[in-house]
Image 1: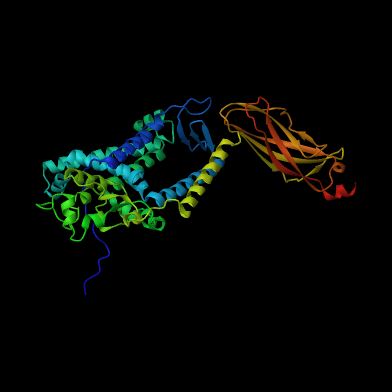
Image 2: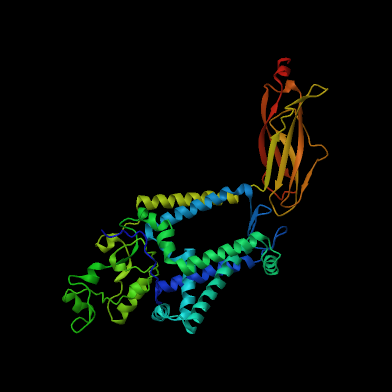
Amino acid sequence: MPEEVLFQERIEIFPRSVKGRYRSIKTGILFLAYAVYFLLPWLRWAREVGPEQAILFDIEARRFYIFDLVVYAQDIFWLAGLLLIGAFLLFFVTGLAGRVFCGYFCFQTLWTDVFVLIERLVQGERNARIKLARADWSNEKIIKMGLTHFLWLLVALLTGLTFTLYWGNAPDLIVQMFTGDAPFAAYATTLFLAMTTYVMAGMAREQVCTYMCPYARFQAVMFDSDTLIVAYDESRGEREKGRLKPKKGLMTSAERDNAEVGDCIDCGYCVQVCPTGIDIRNGMQYQCTSCALCIDACNTIMTSIKFPTGLIRYSSEHALEGKKTRFLKGKNIGYALALLATISLLVWSVANRSEIEMLVRQVRQPLSVTLSDGRVQNRYDIKINNKTTKPAKYLISIEGLNGAELDMGRFSEIHLAAEHSVKLIAKVRIAPEKVSKSRTKFNFVINSIDSKIKRKVSQQNVFYVPQRLLKKK
């Protein structure tokens, strides 16, 4: 009985270059993504207070600076909103157009494309790379392989270093990195990202998409017969007698149609350009990332032999069967509505964010004090946070507790610097006969004096009067 094989050694893939519409789209997205990623930490942004870096994640100060928006630790629920938007957008796009995110926007795809480009520039086109890989070690092979891996490591180090620059002032941090003065976390993060980039984009490549990424596995749940996929038109490519190379009497598409021979000439170009090494002619496969390079390859061959293009194309199963593709389906509409709702809520939350934050906590030891004049006093700890990049002046008052006195000590006005907070003690006093129950709800209210902050902020709390004093009324 033959032994069952549980593991197959990786078969190295040498993708061939191709030109075409979808390769151009992928290249444009790649340049845009790299420009944004590598240049954004160096973009300066003028602020009255705070760093002059457009995007900066300040862990020590627990603030994220995103252009004019300052995100505090307590605004972390915005991250949940972004994650929901990303999930709904992914589901919506997948339901319509399959794995286009994987083929055009995924970091693994973008970085692997660059690593393959480096490999091609140093070692040559596909056949030259295959020959070099199979050749015995020589000076030429050592030089070419060494240069390839050196350039991979250089790109990987730049990737890790750039990521680290988002977490500190880039001009200062880069100097510290090269002078040995940067924090250990900066070096550790840079090296970790560099090594993972080198391994994933240079060594693992398609195995990340095939075995490591969970999206490749659960994408089938979101596919249906109306989802656009990269598809091979088998009825045209095979017809009754299958594939044959062009020869006399089978040189045109019309001649092949009359002879019931498919338009596919079995050149293998679509397989050679595939970054995951699959044959799209075998039908939809989970390894396919919808990069559409096989479409460019097939169209290039079809154009060169003057056959109609589109033998491989973006299509749905229903379209291949001659039926109408329906995009307005309950599933897609549901994803779209959920996406729009989440985006609207996040935008509303950011647009209406409070520029003042006030936290009030009642002091419970003791819960109340009876003064010599018979009034009851409660104490409260108040923390005020100025979340703007400008200094401001505040006044605190109380509402909903008629006849009460608010004592802020020596603080008649509160002057608070930009992005600073202050802790205060407030004393509230009232005669017992002016309240009707032991626990009375009221509000602390904070307003800006100089009108730099338009909205007022209030927080509800409770004033406590001992029951024994109420009975004396």
